[in-house]
Image 1: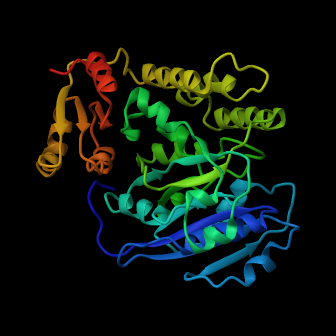
Image 2: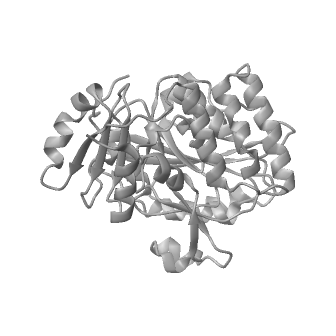
Image 3: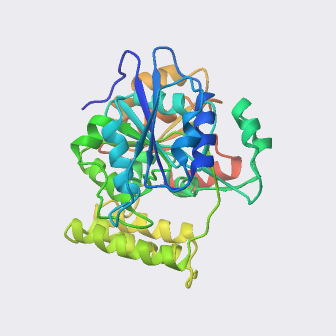
Length: 380
């Protein structure tokens, strides 16, 4: 597994687990019908019905879609859950790249192509995309079936938070010691060969939480790089963690730690319990995640943070030349890359560059943010 572009078209399989979410799945499938593909790529969708009682199959049967749709019904048992459903979907899929989404999501027309473009940069990559949280309110399904429009949805009131973590540390997702924790399966893609090689999701995770992070950890240990593709946009109604969900999360965390024999870099996730505990919000989500990242970096010998980075500032005129010399530079010294291009031309290549050094990346920071970055890392 090496860095480098891959040629030819990609076969992409979108896997959707669903439980009593027939109308939402129908809406998602119609949104996917509007997705654009790069030349040579193809799309299929696999819906795994996890024992629904709302006649999901009948609701989907009448859809006229521009891609093959596989529908798999799993009888409901005590072992049912998102991990088992997704594994069944991956087993049914035939694509080179598997894209994981939730049944109640809305995806933008560039969603599939954005995932695929990053997988062309290297073959051993986990790609995560952002999830916008919607305010309560009605969604105009019929309009979304004709065109993607933010006006057809409630207001976007926030994002899933990973952008805040990267704002603290670096927009190079792969540079986070805890990047594997953020492998949220609501918007994630990886080549099918890697999912099969690590054994897929651990089906002993039941209820809510962490089955995707644990998969991310095994993919990281396999040697995969992680990238955050900001153009792979998905939206979902916001939700609060209930006391019942938190109990499930804690049980899953215990299983996660036990499965990996108490490995310290896994156990550091206990630092973030207060981010999810409805009864104790004395630390907010970002505080908890920042502490977890610093703990993981300390375990890896990455603290104190280095200073004296080489500053690489890029604009439209210098982007091509910088891309050519980026791997050699990153192999030799700690880099701080400030990307001034409008299209974030270095975002993908930076995240897909393997280096034993620190490689920080920020896209068009504000003047104030830029000064904070320079003060913190003191480039030479």
